[in-house]
Figure 1: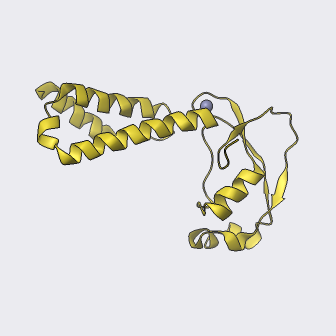
Figure 2: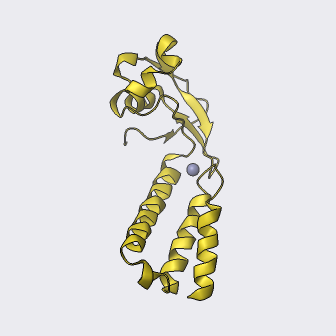
Length: 148
Ligand SMILES: [Zn+2]
């Protein structure tokens, strides 16, 4: 099992808790209200935003996330492990498109296959994120595709 990820788990399993060492938090997390009172992490049950599977952001996972990875104490889980992996794969592919775009904009702006792959990835990612999609970028694709 990989650490730092949400693990799918039966919802009736007993929730557990582990002690928190707030001194291990990032400097930013130490500015939070929680720094003053957080004594332990408790399992946080949630449903994956994408596939609705029942998941738990375990107490152990929270300790690793906030004390070892130094993530912001405000961070919450929204996806299950497999949906998180898939969204990560899409993000990496998007980054690759952006890097290629930065290098050869003139050439790629008339490359219909590239543009449709890029916009397809953006649409695919929307299914995994709880916030509004990037409308400006979609507009850009619509214009480029019409021209390409
Ligand atoms: Zn899921």
